[in-house]
Amino acid sequence: MKTIEKNAVLQKLAANKYVIVVILLALVLLLLPEGSKTAEIQQPGGDPLEATGVPLATESEKLETLLSQIQGVGRAQVLLSKNGAVVVCDGAELATVRLDVTNAVISYTGLGSDKISVMKMK
Image 1 (cartoon, one colour):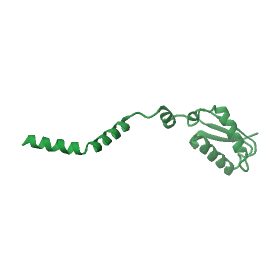
Image 2 (cartoon, rainbow, N blue to C red; image 1 turned 60 degrees about the horizontal axis):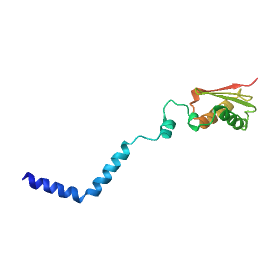
Image 3 (cartoon, one colour; image 1 turned 180 degrees about the horizontal axis):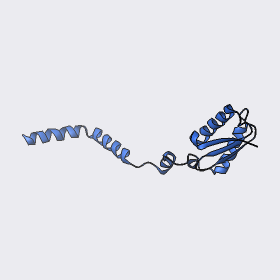
Image 4 (cartoon, rainbow, N blue to C red; image 1 turned 60 degrees about the vertical axis):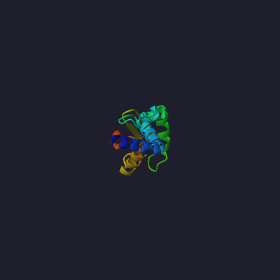
């Protein structure tokens, strides 16, 4: 009786061999490690700006230009580091300007609002 069951199972496997091959290939692909670029960008706790490969000084200059275009900001200076951002600008005495600047820095850098300081320029 067991011989008949084995033959029946083998016949069913042979009839579905392509489906089995596709499933096995899918499992192998799921088990392969991700590429290093993807792991670098998605690494939790890492610096969002480091993934771009652009120096932080260059990013600071770009952000200064962007922020100075926001209404009420005036002159702006930006210091970016791995741990956060400091923005010094003319219009920082207004809460709306501080909020706009903070939101712009969040959008540009991916940093959290707790890592961004906006201060009044003297």
